[in-house]
Length: 376
Image (cartoon, rainbow, N blue to C red):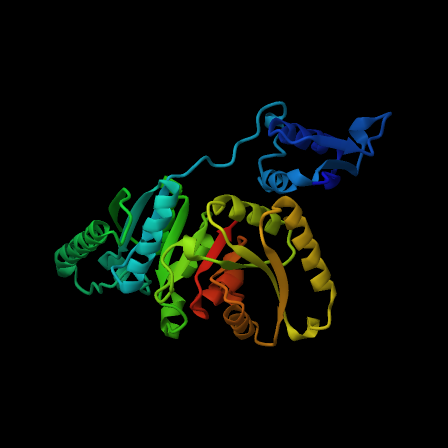
């Protein structure tokens, strides 16, 4: 492929030198242009350029807030997290929880990883005042019932383990290492805390799909994990027709033309390179933009760029527009036979999450299609 130079950033001379050192320590050739030859240190607006093929990796490095620290000049830049060998599956002993286990065990087999089945239950102090989420089915109204509830939790966890052993013995599940973990506390907080400690490769969670009642949506643990996790999350609806990623043929990747999508797409391709599928790049727009051909031009440009980066990948693109975007997207997914929806979920503050829910949360409750969310 033609490896032309592209401008990664326009910085002051000092910052450009820092970033140049960081990138070159990572094996990325870097060039600085427009430098004041007489007084380089007072140069402003110098261009830092790299090869186009290195752009996704370079963007991933510059997204880190540590690259400007002078202490790393001349030293090797911090590496992206190494290979992570655990698949985290929060469970609540429901049928859709077992669906997540089925998918998770097959995924673990592909990557030679260990499955961790995590169940979190509320203590009485939480149960009296907080809403219930997806991973807690027991109401505790009296402290005297704690022992009974704990016995019930342990019994259910043992029953789940016995079911999995039976499915492994019958060949329905692959034979991979797995452990069961029980924690006390608020489900989403404990799931996030455990993931931070263990740094799972992916979190796989079962969901009930689009027929959930509105009251179930308020405190949904899956939605909270999607919003707050730094790890990729795969949400599997109960009635998903396939049980492993080998069966996935077509994936929709939703983009809003943010440069972070390049990073997310590279991460997605690298993480799922063992499988074979086609990708549809999707841009969501409302009716007022219906006649804006600029969106299609940008999508075509992104497609061309990705085609150069990943020549063996079948990539298409489309613009989905309607005054009811979610309904129209669902129709597109059905007509195009989309197996999984993939999108990024950038960190947003609590007020933005409460009053303007992200597309990931909306799709979670309005679709029966699995949702793969790349968090950044």
